[in-house]
Image (tube, rainbow, N blue to C red; front, side, top):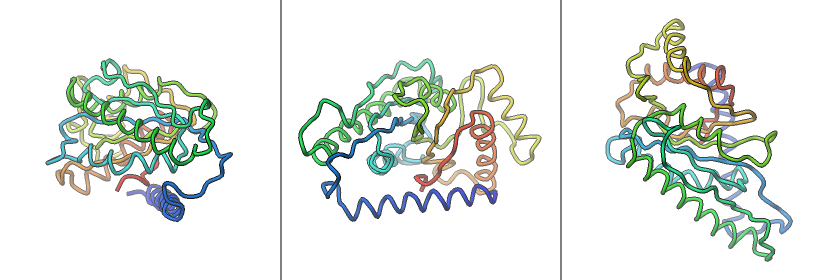
Length: 253
């Protein structure tokens, strides 16, 4: 693991820990400023491949159950959009309507308690439905295509940070590219793999975006520490240098 990667993970883990302490202090129905409004654009991208199985994989449903609601609260998500990871994510027929967690037309005084609890539950149900669809329709691991689907969802504030939670092991596998076939130990080998992935396909257009990875390189104990480090370097090159997004692993445990 590179020094920069370790530092980033320490920083993001600390930020998530602080958010968790704040939530614990206030509680889900605790005190809040009645004038507070949610404003962030957010998305969740869900891996429907077999490697996300609950028994031998990285347990996509379990990670979704554990992560999504704290993520929505910590990032103050007003909107949550949904995208699938399948064998051909861009062409996938899986669709779930964007959820407005803090609708403007709601005027009662319990906006930060009953309303958000209810609308976040609706958002969680939408994520469950998207994961189920991705698992049933052309399951696969076109992670880059899943990010392209996320890039196509509506955004209300184009110049504000777009928070994208990706629940996947990032073992890219689509009809044209399978990461498992590539050696990644050297710079030259990684360059070859990156070029093979991005050549001939459009990169997701994700300005002002942070990608939060959950399940990264967790394939039921089948990925060696050396391969995890190589995958980290490969995806750092793809996401940070090619797609040009920030990467946050604070939710990745």
